[in-house]
Image (cartoon, rainbow, N blue to C red; front, top):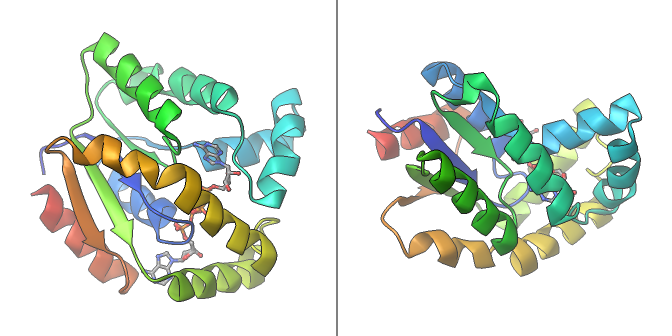
Length: 189
Ligand code: B4P
């Protein structure tokens, strides 16, 4: 595995966070998740968290301006110089353009974009199961359906942005966590 600037894209519940955690730990590089950062801001009750809370809980995206700001701040930290696994960012074409511009300016373009895919019924089932375990405010059925719609409308279009290049690999994520991890390793080798 030589790529160290890696992006995971896919619908809610497909395993981005789960696999990003494993991949980042295997490679010894940070996992950068805008979802985690926004939830931390909500938990801390910061001004940013107050602006993000309602949007997250209703399944809408937080504004590009806010998310681009927090992602770039995190990417500029020293531990991200050796690589990173991006999880959940970018999520709109505008975020993808901002990321490309930022990384091009630093001379460190993305090396791989892994697109995780699984049927919607499986995704809803996984998220409802997580709701029972973790009680995340956005893991209820109405919000999950809204998040799926937001993915189709706002995030799926950014796949065309990356598919134009040669860095994309599609991963069938409709399997066990260990099996999906193996498929990701194969795609990166
Ligand atoms: P995220 O935190 O990114 O949440 P997510 O898309 O639902 O996926 P997550 O990564 O957490 O779950 P995973 O698939 O790993 O975003 C939450 C919200 O934050 C967004 O709705 C938005 O409001 C905001 N936000 C975040 N980034 C943003 C951005 N860039 N722009 C604007 N707004 C942004 O796993 C789901 C469950 O499935 C887990 O319980 C896991 O254990 C299980 N699982 C995983 N893989 C499995 C497998 N193979 N088999 C069975 N179960 C599996």
